[in-house]
Image (tube, rainbow, N blue to C red; front, side, top):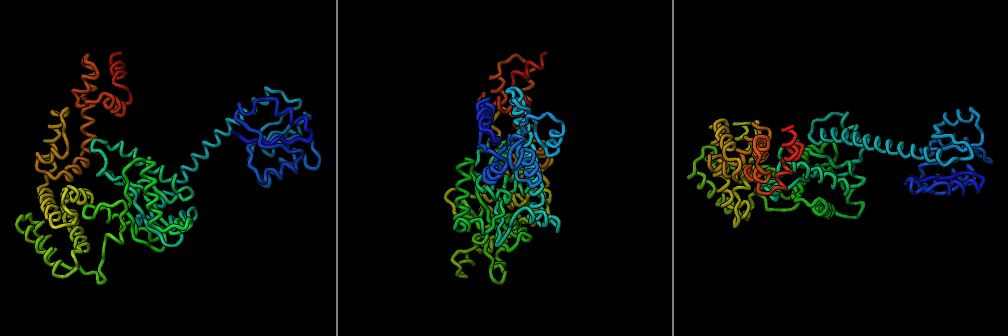
Length: 528
């Protein structure tokens, strides 16, 4: 409802205006009345209005003087209608000069007033649309500059822009909020995950309220990471007399409930200024890569998960280097021996099985080895996936059994990198998809059949075809169904079954996503 202030020194005119039309039906509500310009000014000091209707001839402050004061002193951006018994052009000209919306002669006709109100409603809708567009553009511009600073690729211009628009004071952390893909259905396509990511971003903004600009969509920019970046400042929690952990725990609980999605948080180390946020971001990225060796949690804190010794020296470097060499050379017997040696040395040193610093060193070196073979593949993501795949029920994360299984899997992966298996394998898999697309094909099943690590195969697939294996399979199935729709008279449910879809509603939904129309309409259009 648009709020209206009626201003006239004749009460009978005010009453007549109130009764002339059904204001609420037209989308307006009478917020108040005033008997002169002074009273109107006092009113708008305390109550916002969208439309002011004022008589031109009033004692002390006339309608024109009221309009002039409001515009020159920027007291309100409300629409303004002058009511007058004078038809002289000079009055109308003066009103127009001060952005008067309309100049209505008395006696006021219902039809004319209705036309003016409809025009104001349209102008309000246009104004709100422009404001939304401007705000969206401002937020996107701010986000681009903030991402530059977060990733450490910035200059003083980027810093100045974000400091002008957002308050970053005190200690700061980068917090990565991301979908936990381990808890998402494998059948979910990339497009749906992207939709989930946008929903998560909207819920983040709702929770943060005045601090919504601290939240940035898709900071990583990586195709298989669905993240929201959050620049946390201590004062955000302190204003509600809460601790940092309590604030983030409540934030996470809200996201999970409102977005109805599996979400985790990766909390980077604390820095003292926004210009150093890249250091915090890099530590959150480390957490993302090393999750597979950490106990399952809702929130991972870099300070707790990644331990660094005072001297910066790896405790068991000799044993870790030996293990690295055996993994690089894919020597099964040596891998088993070196994992045993590593755990024996940990026990001898009396650190109670605390292996974090040594594991971090191992993982860093493995990523380096893989990158030397192929720097076009997201090696950090593959490392995390291999670690997750190596973890089985009954094992403890980071235990000897887990590390042994992981080391064997990673050794095979490095061997496949050296063999450059991508070309021939993908050709064979593409043939298999074209022939058996209606069957229950999975990336894991194909990786086992062709002796390729499934994480690596997934990355190779995305690199060559520009989409995930699941999306490529779905596209193949939809294309086959589209061919059948045009070339045969089979029922749609039969075509769906033959394409590998056992749920007709799901088939129709996927077909619309791919082709933009229903299967039935696609068939009709092709036969016109």
